[in-house]
Image 1 (cartoon, rainbow, N blue to C red):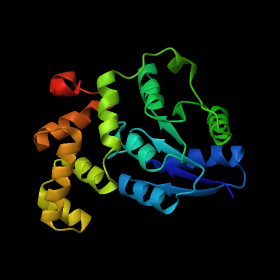
Image 2 (cartoon, rainbow, N blue to C red):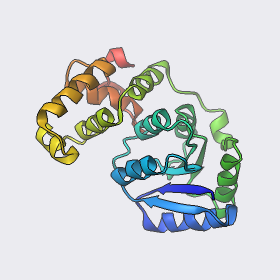
Image 3 (cartoon, rainbow, N blue to C red):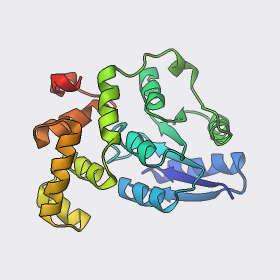
Length: 221
């Protein structure tokens, strides 16, 4: 049985996705996640799923970071990005970071169903506008490569740093000691090439949907 995963924080859009999937794959088995923690738990529990439909704008996803992380940890899982953002550059960045396709949320049900079917067949679904957009910069590509080197726990620590959480808060959320968090932090800084927490967050911010170049360290551009 085909297993499809849906990650979106809007119930109405999840319902729309279910409808599109039912037309493309009538007997599909569906699982859904409404937040980023549920997303990671869902993917980890369904390593043999056939497709993940991921909302680029879901809170906690942090731009393209979640896509990069998931593609590193689960390279066999195709990811079809869905988003209210329709700029060609955003679509192209998603594809360059490993997405198998990109569907704007304004697309009609027929287009959405076609994208699902196409990716399930092993092809890519590339909007025409994205094909001619510029690819990701060498600096962004390098940051993505650094993120792919993080373990799942290290990646979660980095995301929580980006949310402004303190070590004791991160320890509570992960159910570990502060000493363990500090060890993860040391590994994160080393792998990202950052000298402190702030710089680590700024480097990861290169993968934001709308990165601020003035806030990114020069050596990470």
